[in-house]
Length: 233
Image 1 (cartoon, one colour):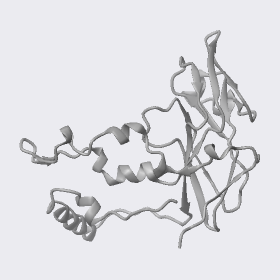
Image 2 (tube, helix red, strand yellow):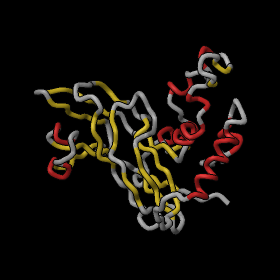
Image 3 (cartoon, helix red, strand yellow):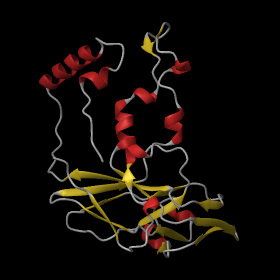
Image 4 (cartoon, helix red, strand yellow):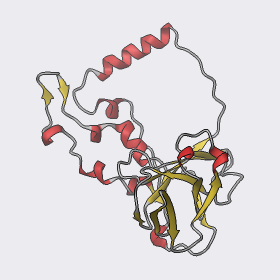
């Protein structure tokens, strides 16, 4: 049975075009463009005896891109440079506020700005009892103009909209960041207790068996032997 992750527009003003969506529906362009195999040829390379597959065939990488849901920016915002500092303008929603710099004063990136900007997130999130959400910058992007700070929200009990402090990746960049730009990736997870331990002899034997199984195939080895499909709809 699917776990329900409910998003609520706390303003009642967001156009459906800028609603959250499953991360699988918004893969970055670089990932769409890369071929599955070097030179688009599926082969075992003679010199290395390794497959010619690219990251397009890596299931752990794919799982990171498609995990959870993307919250896009609900409005344009403009970045201008004045007196050596970046300033922000936005078209609606009181989109950007600021943290005092002392709240993050030992963070190297925050030390470079007079105040830490914070994006307005209009979305409250509700998950069933025992489930929280990890909120991170959209994973494995190569075109992100900004990066939010990560956090974990206990969304089974807290359903208000948590806003997103962020830093621009390039302190000299100027221009308009359009509405609909991926702002955050929300990955729900079940809260459980965890305890770290270290491997014994039996674990090494299991790893050796897995390695032998993995090496019995040329192609799609992890996918066919070990991968489990994840569903975020």
